[in-house]
Structures are given as structure tokens and as C-alpha cells.
Length: 418
Ligand SMILES: Nc1ncnc2c1ncn2[C@@H]1O[C@H](COP(=O)(O)OP(=O)(O)OP(=O)(O)O)[C@@H](O)[C@H]1O
Image 1 (tube, rainbow, N blue to C red):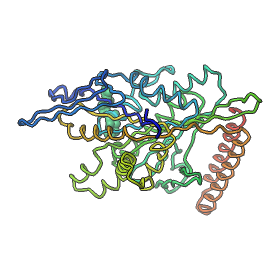
Image 2 (image 1 turned 90 degrees about the vertical axis):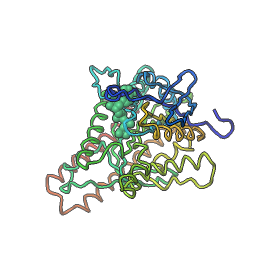
Image 3 (image 1 turned 120 degrees about the vertical axis):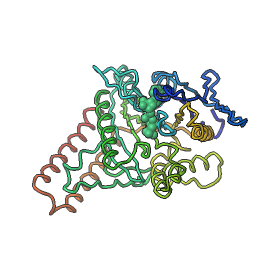
Image 4 (image 1 turned 135 degrees about the vertical axis):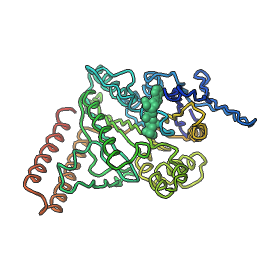
């Protein structure tokens, strides 16, 4: 804990084991993890030049660490904070192929009878724990999730229904990031699905990840170049001693960043520096934001990229933030590993000032929801006006149907869950 000026961001390090292929060709290992001492060392001796560096983190997970260990030590405390009404963010940062997606989502094992596979990552485990706790408390709550992808400074909604159903033009409409007038931002038209069970979220996750993969093959892009943000927002009802109904709100953001090697070098090597620069504007800006925060060197360039605009509050704000840096043990990754270790180690100096979200009176929240419904109504109307003459009869019916669903879910949200 940092004194006076806030609380340091937690930075954890995870080193994956050698893969089967790496083992089969006897790839030399240059990383050692000492979990007790929370240390990671990189050592190599080439032509009498000795590299030997040791870094200390808030937690270190060696190659033998299990998904369950990472979850228990890194995520369980944050889930508790979210249920207490804080916003929390977990970032996975590291070179491609070091286990960011494995750590966040899992190894691809399927859930059976509602039981998570042992390789399930942070996201499904967090979801399960949230539901388990709320149910054990017999809490009255409502939960919604969103799943965004950011690629080349363009936002895609991974939970949006298939575009083909809603538009003759199959090209994707880029989603706009808007200021909310309270110092934050929101993504216009972002699908927020109300969920009422863990298994529902597992399905949503599968759908979102599946969509990410399809989009990848279609556009020939790699997951290593896009960022994904999975967010869970929970509203919990509480009663004051005077009998007033209050709503407590917490949010958990789970962020799988693009491969860190994409910061200019790889792009420059294959002669596509400009493209790489554009693609990784967000990653580069994240680095600059971190540096400015750590060095207290003036203006923080949050506004220079969508990622940092979206996650502004997680870096130097009121959110509780944790970074899981991932590395590989192989000698071939040493350069990137050292740069990840440096980056993550520097990020440890960022201080946030976590603040619990103000509880809202249920009546005020309902007013907000009415306002939101009005805005959606206008958006729908404007969209139909704009497309008016192009909308075939079938499309009009589909829009009407969607509108009905939208309304009924809004009402459901307001009156049944809370
Ligand atoms: N801790 C681990 N234990 C076992 N296998 C792992 C571990 N971490 C990663 N792997 C395996 O290594 C491979 C690469 O991991 P993963 O796809 O998660 O990397 P990534 O960092 O997300 O890469 P990208 O940036 O390309 O998305 C996968 O096959 C994954 O199952």
C-alpha cells in the first residue's frame, strides 16, 4: 500500500511452461520464478556476456501454477471489492503466445453440468464466484455484461446480433465512443446483456470469443493485435435502517491486451511500421499514460487512444487495478520477456485512489433508466429515419420486434430484479 497518495496498482507475473514443441527441441530456459520471494530472474550467458536480472512483483506464478491458484490469489479479493461497490479492472499484458488469453478466458475446456473445467480462466471463474456469493446471500441483484473488441482504433461489439440480420449492407458500422458529461465515456449502442445465471454468461463468452475468432479469419487479423474488454456490472439492492431502498453498484473489467511485441518493433521489422503504429496506437498510448503517471511528468495523454479513454479510471483513477503480466521461459523470447518485466515493474508505481461507488436511491436509478430508454427510443427512431426507404418490410418488422424486446427487458430489469 502506498501512503497518502493512494494505493499502488497490483502487478502479478505469470510464466507459462514450455510448450510440447519447445520441450521436444530442448529449448533452453532462461527464467526462474521464486514464488515465496515473489521474484523472477532472467539469466543468460552468451559469449561471456552475462545477463542476470531479478524483478520483484506483488505475486509471482511459476510455470507449474494452476488456473485455480491465479484466480484464488489474484482475483478473489477483487471480486469481493466489486460486490462491495468498487470498480475493478484486471489487465493481461505480455508478448503473443505467453498465455494472456489462457489466463483470462482459459484453455478451451468445456463447461459440463455447470461445472468449470480445470483450465477455465479468470473470467468464467470470476463470474461463477459472483453468482455463488450473491446467491448465498440471497441478494436481490441485477447483472449485465458487455464484450468489446478494439482493433486498429475501431470498436466492435462482440455481443451484437449478426449484422446480416439487421442490415443489407454487411459492412460493420464502427461504434462511437461518447463523453458521458460526467468525465467518463460510453460506447454508443453497445449491447449490454442482462444475465441471471453463470451458465448464461458462459454461453455469452463462447459466443463473443467465437465472434472474435471468425472476424479474425475473415479479415486475416490476429487476436494478438486486438484488445478485448469483458465487463460485468452488478447492481445490488440494500435497505437503509429507515427502510429506504438503495442500489449498490460495482463493475469488473477484464482486459486482454494485444501482444506487447506489437509496440512498434515487430511492425518496423516487417516494413509495416505505419500500419503497426496505427494498430497499436492504444498499446503505445497505454505505455505513455503509465510513464506519465509514474514519472508525474505532467499532462496524461488519456485522450490519445480509445483504450486509454475507455479505461481511464483504471489508471490513476478511482478503480482498483491489477495487471497480470505474462512471459514465456524460453531463451528465444528473452528480449521480449525483459521488456515485459521492465514495463510491468514500472507499472507497479502507479497509484490509484480507489473510491466506492456512491449508492443510488432506487427511485433515482429508475429515473435514470427512463432517461436511458428515451435515448434508445430516439436512437432507434433516428436509425429508422435514416435508413427509411431502404428498409424492406421484413427489416421493419425485425426492428419493431427488437424494440419490443428492448422495452420488455428494460421493464424486466427495473421491476423484477430490483
Ligand atoms: N500457464 C499455462 N499453462 C499451460 N498452457 C499455457 C499456459 N499459458 C499459455 N498456455 C498455452 O500457450 C498457448 C498460447 O497462449 P495464449 O493463446 O493464451 O497466448 P496469448 O498471450 O493470449 O497470445 P495472443 O496475444 O496471440 O492472443 C496456448 O496454446 C495456451 O493454451
